[in-house]
Amino acid sequence: MWGLVAAGSVFFPGLFLMSQQTLKHLMGRSEGDAVIVSTRLVSSVQAVMASSAGCLIVSSCRDVVEDSHWLTDTYILFATPYFAYDVYAMFLCYCHRLQVKGHEEVGGVRWKVGSYLRREKLMVLHHVFVVAFCFPVSLYWRQGKGDFFQGVLFLAELSTPFVCLGKVLIQYEQQHTLLHKVNGVLLLLTFFTCRVLLFPYLYFAYSRYASVPVYLVPLEAPWQCNLGAALLWPLQLYWFTLICRRALRSRSTVRYPTETDCCRVSSQNVKKSP
Image (cartoon, rainbow, N blue to C red; front, side, top):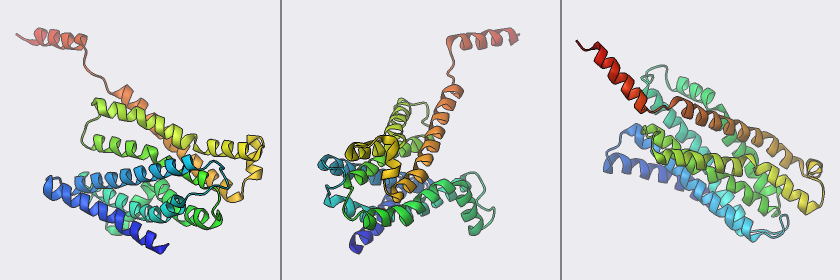
């Protein structure tokens, strides 16, 4: 058990350090770029691993409550240290963004930590909740049942690589590229499917198993499940709203010059010329 936790505690920070050093020394990237890109890379790797585990678990469980798969508890133990690592990695990214903006001298470490926690409070609370609540509930309270539902929860990570790629493209000012546009569409689709619809689908799947109407499932399901859904689903709705707003804002603010614009500029230049 603790061997898997130790393996995860070594793997994710180790991958981050290896990627950071590679970007700095072999590709000539700056310290800030190396940290930010490495953080996104590790998050994407974890997301691919979690999604793959989720696919295997969901496809192997015919009975959504009784069937079990060895990979469920194994990946929970291995991946839990990632959420603690990610809080620190995101703090490093925040510090480098402050440096780029010229605010690195404002306050000391305590000020940076406080500013980071205020700015990223939802993300930090989400990670703390996963480690402090979801980890013990998933590992001990389930008692080997409900692996299907745990596998579906793993599939929520399917949208993470698109989030990471989008941020890297923005970092390198590639918002105008076709890759960024395609990535944005895939992000909206995967986030809506795997995060927004996730909890309604879990309740629907349990209603079919228990042969009860969906609206009665909260009365049938254990309180731990209802608590987790009540705390995590609103976050997904909020983040999806932010994604939609940014997508609409980018469409409304990005305007490419047309032939009319070019002709207007040319005529104005002709009028101004002596």
